[in-house]
Image (tube, rainbow, N blue to C red; front, side):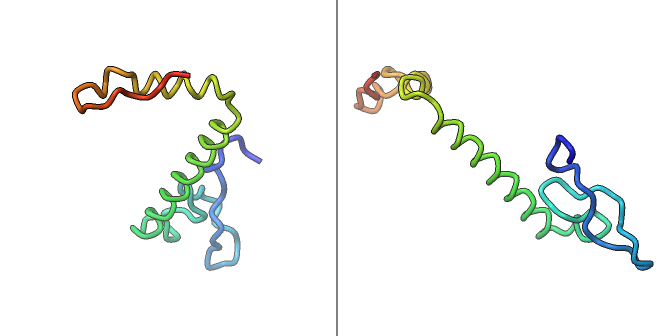
Length: 93
């Protein structure tokens, strides 16, 4: 199997019965010539890639130690960022 998940062959077959041989679009199962250029197919492929990326990020977040998570959240949302809105910010663990 290839190292990149999108480098897979097209699942369609040519008129003579042989497999297409071209590479499928990223996130899809067919090449551009066999329907991969259609807007609905491109949209579904992008959605699959987005969901896969989110799944990997969620798994990585869940494997992190709670201390590391708190540092990341504190770095993204520092206390002084919310002072203009009447909030004190997030407590730093």
